[in-house]
Image (cartoon, rainbow, N blue to C red; front, side, top):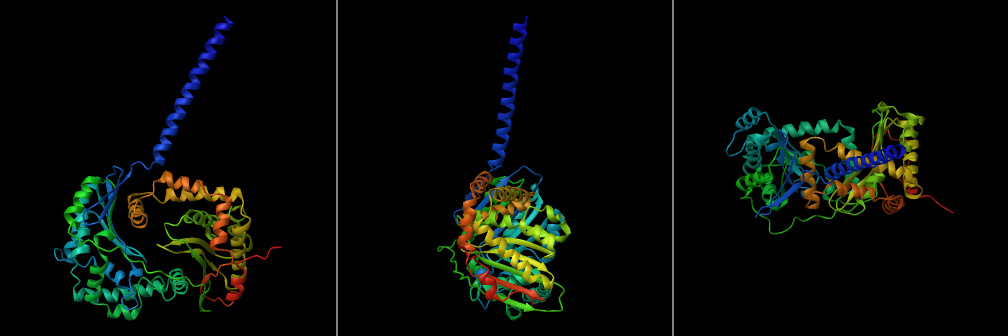
Length: 470
């Protein structure tokens, strides 16, 4: 009897072990499916060179947009600001639709039409119900191909942009980053602002706008991206109908090399309550193999705001020091990438008397990154980077944006599982290596606005970019 019970127990254990294995197998399959970026991103290139990329999640809403490989970097001193001006003119009517007709059509669909300009890209996109995707694509195609660019609309929009420039000037973070680009890439297109100088905005006319469209809005430089309830084959047909006649460019888009200069710009204004400071070294471009280790290093430095609390319990050394010693009100590290260069650094806001102490702690942390960062810190940063990466892809619009940007930057969308593997492959030595390559003993670019009398002299800042070791 005992032997029989023992046999039943062993059989039960074997069975339960099998059930457990099946559960684990199913769980592994689920994880594998998630990491394999299902639904997949499908990409099709039309005969004229325009690329169509989409991810169909079967949602009841969708985001579709046109990502154009042209921004303020494609401008010169004379026409700087024209890309952003065009973005404003896009919604002021076309040959087929007046501004009122366009606005009513979008409103009646319950859709949202928007656009933005960056240093390397111009984007027009629409959020709508899945059933309205054909209409949204047709409207977007009409906007970039048939904008009326009427003289009265240009004059009206000129005053709108000048008012927007005044608003930007009151946003000190924007001001600091514009100054940072101006000093880091002085004398090159990346050093220009996106909005352009006032004298250009006052003189830009229809011929400038038309020339920019004819030069840069070529099919091979445009991606039609879609996410949500979007059928890829249908999107390709819509692209052929609405964008198939776009002129193909025989020559690839030229990238003007942008020289990085270690330098500084300080705008001292003691009437402001707080000092706003950014310091950065030259990073790498989108496609460089060092980009992922630099992203991990950037995550290691982290971000902190006084309103978040945390104090002594923060994992980031700099956040802990900032909270305990009242070094700053907030800081955020950044890794801004362009095609062939980038800015890797930190922006912080602090009381006037804390400028020196805060900068000392920042540079100490940078030197520690280059020489003695630990395994545990790198593992934490890698996990946080993966989490942030997934959290940013919440919704059809950020997914569509991710698709459009990656197709322009990499000519493909990197699957999540591949990106995760690349992050997992980063070791402590990789982080130290990129630190020594891009940060250690490099000339930084510094931008400071406000009561910055206590910010150390540039030569002192430069001398703190290395440690003397014996």
